[in-house]
Length: 101
Image (cartoon, rainbow, N blue to C red; front, side):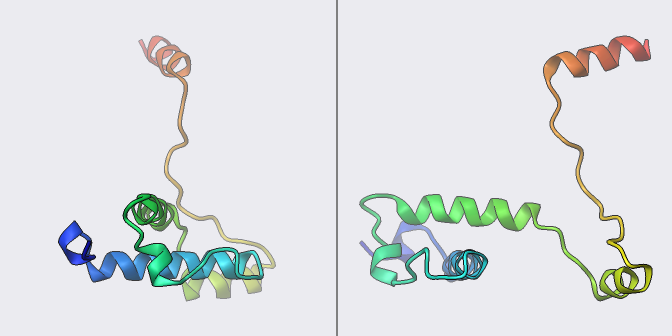
């Protein structure tokens, strides 16, 4: 089966490879194989799950700007980063709605 005929793009492959390289560096060793014949084994749908994971990590990744790095070194701490709202349980949402009425 051909890589492009399955609907994936070269950018998808690049994203997965960057994600796996980052994970390998984080674990200080070769935890994940970067061999293309292993990654592109579509029989076991490994590439699809790796692509989903890489997209999720990219979407939730906190970007530290050079300005943030400089401020952190001058103040001696980490500057506040923008984060999305954390997940809430249904009970907490309903309680919040009841309190606002």
